[in-house]
Amino acid sequence: MGYAETYKSWQDDPEGFWMAQAGAIDWDQPPSKALFDEAAPLYEWFKDARVNTCWNALDRHVEAGRGAQTAIIYDSPVTDTKQHISYAEMRDRVALMAGALATRGIVSGDRVIIYMPMVPEAIVAMLACARIGAVHSVVFGGFAANELAVRIDDATPKAIIAGSCGIEPGRVVEYKPLLDGAIEQASHKPEFCVIFQREQCVAELVEGRDVDWHAAQDGVAPAGCVPVSGDHPAYILYTSGTTGAPKGVVRPTAGHLVALNWTMKNIYNVNPGDVFWAASDVGWVVGHSYICYAPLVAGNTTVVFEGKPVGTPDAGTFWRVMAEHRVASFFTAPTAFRAVKRVDPKGDFLEKYDLSALRAIYLAGERADPDTIEWIANLTGKPVYDHWWQTETGYTIAGNPAGLEALPVKIGSPTVPMPGYDVQILGDDGHPLPAGELGAIAIKLPLPPGTLPTLWNAEARFRSSYLTAFPGYYETGDAGMKDEDGYLWIMARTDDVINVAGHRLSTGAMEEVLAGHPDVAECAVIGVADALKGQLPMGFLCLSNGVNRPHEEIVAEVIQRVRDQIGPVAAFKLALVVERLPKTRSGKILRATMAAIADGRDYKMPATIDDPAILDELTEAMKAIGYPQG
Ligand code: COA
Ligand code: AMP
Image 1 (cartoon, rainbow, N blue to C red):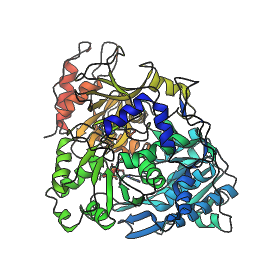
Image 2: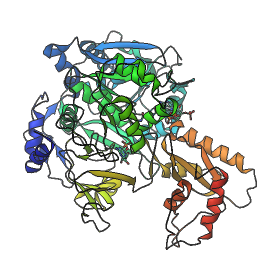
Image 3: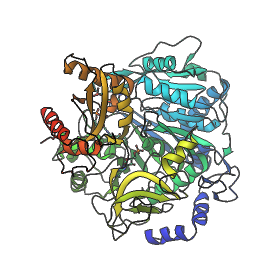
Image 4: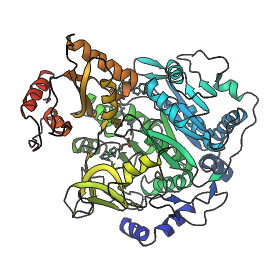
């Protein structure tokens, strides 16, 4: 069956479609039906099933005689390490870690925060939680202690599993002081922490609270897989919203297994035993779905890569990893390729490597600019597929289902909606717009299996953030259009979320940090276009009356504040002091107009602007720091 027939088969019988896909999962108790809609507009899938994620990711492959197959290839140019770990060995390592957690009192439903770099132990920790029904919440290493503290207070974990450090080019990032600082700041305290010591930096353990990764496993019995109900949260993953408080996206166990398994063949076109590589980080949704869960559930070999596209040691690293490990499908964010292109525009490094195993390259996480897509396609001669999704969905909303049927690529479009997703472009009044018209992108409810059923501890926020603007639909937060062929075009966010190097960040959260500076009376943060990272945050500060310190000092202080309170990943390095901010007569800051000025785009003078002269002042101030660029 090709794409059109498959999509239609889903449209004709959505529940039948997903029940058929559920056949690929090993159930302890199979679901009696697919959709549970009693609490609409909240929906659940396969709720009455019982299942274990770790069994499906590891044990069942071992039982099927494939224990010797490599589950994980760890390739770490920053530590000069390469390891192959088989499915049997992963199962044993995970069972032991799960035993260690269980021995210390972790039971099904308990939360465990994982704060680890890109090492196989991060995957071991995630699957160990899954094995005993504990709900993990992985926090990206580039976040500061404060962000970790916020997540500790929201998820109230019984335990935290952390690495002693991460390795960034040129520096070792000590995680332990960040962890200790976060626990000190948080009101909730974990009962214990498991620390994975790395030789690059051995952390000091807190007596009575911290236990060494290996010591924790000494003499414990390996734990078996604990079946959980279909709606049991597999994990919580925090992502940026409009305010500083991150949203805890809940991933339901059964739907997650069914849907992710479907994507590996149908979208990424890989079979059991094929090598799949997503160059992301376990702290992001791409890392959850496509470094850890989906490739393992589908019986692939997954690559855990600890490095950067450039500088570790050079711009040929991606090609080297693809060639050396015979990667069949590769997935990363466009920004990673922009970094490679900037250093090696002619692709000289590629000449050294054999990419004959590679079938296609997949891009997501941010808008894929046509230049980058064409550059990759011309250089490699491989198909380059853009696909669009978000933390909330956990897998592709719109993509090119190469394993079903490779559809013609239209550069700039992530192609078409996947089965499960009825994507509509809505006008302000909530009515679907015709082809070619720009509107809010919404998905008709119910969302398919594996997508978020709610936000952790925040059902009201779930409803107000996603279900209220357009009743009967899920609001994606993206704007765009569909063309005559049904292809989607994703143009912009409709909220204050920006995308920096494929990382989703909240300008609202940064504004909260700037506003906390004692000299700042008012502020705004916008996303400005950046040739490498897609967008960068830029902050505008209005100072309190009577403050007459040098502006550079205040700017340096707010930059440091964002680094300390949100983290280096925010890449907040642009800030300027201005007299006034442009506002509507009702007092709303005109952020979109400010962003247009910074990017040198044409803009329409907002009809409701209070004082148009402020825009001229702002244009001058931005010029002084080199914006618009080029
Ligand atoms: N732990 C600690 N610090 C981290 C970190 C981590 N796991 N990841 C990033 N940082 C730091 C970086 O060292 C950098 O610090 P600096 O300000 O001192 O230089 C800062 O956070 C910003 O990091 P990043 O956005 O990664 O920028 P970069 O300049 O180091 O690298 C790219 C740019 C394009 C090479 C890089 O962003 C990249 O590889 N992106 C791939 C995209 C990706 O993985 N997306 C995930 C979703 S698919
Ligand atoms: P995240 O939740 O971090 O995965 O970020 C999701 C957001 O990133 C989406 O809502 C979009 O705004 C953006 N995004 C992801 N993939 C794409 C894509 N292929 N094209 C355009 N924007 C994308």
